[in-house]
Amino acid sequence: MKYINIPRDLPSVHKLLKDENVEGLVKNYGVLLVTRSAQKILERTRRLLLEGEPTSFEAVIKILKDEIGRTVQSSLEPVINLTGTVLHTNLGRATLPETAIKAITEIARGACNLEFDLDTGKRGDRFKHCETLLCQLTGAKSVLVVNNNAAAVLLTLNTLANRKEVPVSRGELIEIGGAFRMPEIMAKAGCKLIEIGTTNRTHSEDFEMAINSKTALLMKVHTSNFEVKGFTKSVSTEELSKIAQSHNLPLVTDLGSGSLIDLQKFQLPYEMTVTDALKVGADLVTFSGDKLLGGPQAGIIAGRKDLIEKIKKNPLARAMRPDKITLAALHAVLKLYSNPASLKQELPTLRWLTRDLVEIETMANSLVDIMQERCPGFTTTVVPVLSQIGSGSLPIDRLQSFALRIASDKQKKSNMGVNKLAKAFRNLPTPVIGRVAENALLFDLRCLIDQQNFEKNLESLKIS
Ligand SMILES: *Cc1c(COP(=O)(O)O)cnc(C)c1O
Image (tube, rainbow, N blue to C red; front, side):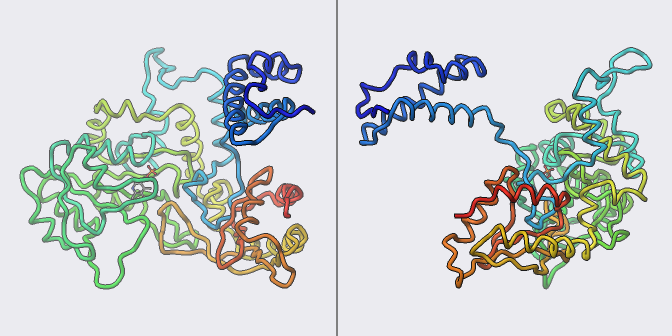
């Protein structure tokens, strides 16, 4: 192997492309991609040479191969979520049921009647596909599906309250992850936020006093990710609805998660359902498709027909419309809700939220020895933990669960810290994501399904 010590001795792009190792790359990935990668690599190598780091022709070829490998590899890949947060926004929120995956594949494969009426042979309405089921499941007179709940809120406010005032309780001016801040959304929607009451206490009279001829609607926001405790008072949807009605204003409720079923039936904490919110007087409700509903990313606006019609006519609606894949998946998920008896089995989100504690513990016990063996220098034990629902659903409530706790073992002198261990798990063929707490790595097993594949995956764990 001949060392290259100065930039002048580096091969040209042309020469690299002629190399027999690179010809294969050109054949597979095209001359353009390989040329660009080669230019980038040569530039980087030149800088390193100037810093006094020698290289070789063979080394340059290898770096080029690796670089192209990384470029063409999808950066979006499946992971195993053992964080203990069931609806983890950073890990893609809800996992879709098999029926939805099947529906996606069928629709993605070819043409479909997305906006085509098979009866008349004329142009159809894309929103029809989920409308009937959504109306039935929520009791709403009409619905509109958009890309996500942030879009649902923005579109609703822009349609009904542009250049007008919207009073919202100070205690509900939320920020949720990913820079969704209610006051900012309202500003972008073109409406003027009127802050009502104080952070901890808002009364009916506060709303009464704020209403004037410029008021467009009243709004209630579900405080998804926090709870105000102590000396507090908020105005319920029911009370707010009475005030709205007496002033002939619509009441819009941003439910955030918006469950379609009463979770108490599954021994879970109560979360206001869409049906309940409409029943107690909300004129429109907005909620997410990929939170408690357990479906694809989507935002749903449900409620009064006249208001939904107005929203549909807003030109912004076109910019927020869902694609056929989303609609196919959403429909398949909604269909599962029409059969409540099998819902818990069929819908992964609900299956995991209601998972039997003994089942989780049994799985933990059957994995502890394998994990101990795979992580020399650490001590693995089974510990009780509390899972979170996540995505701003039921922020306070926790679910009892079991985890594998992998702690560094001082006596055994592990030369690897817990953070490095966590990284090793993230480097697995299917990355495993846990959480680090009190100098240990915790794997909450609530969302683990395929134990066999999990064990196989662990065989590639590299601990040094
Ligand atoms: C999650 C949430 C949103 C945003 O929903 P996305 O589907 O993430 O766009 C808006 N409002 C509330 C109250 C939420 O909890």
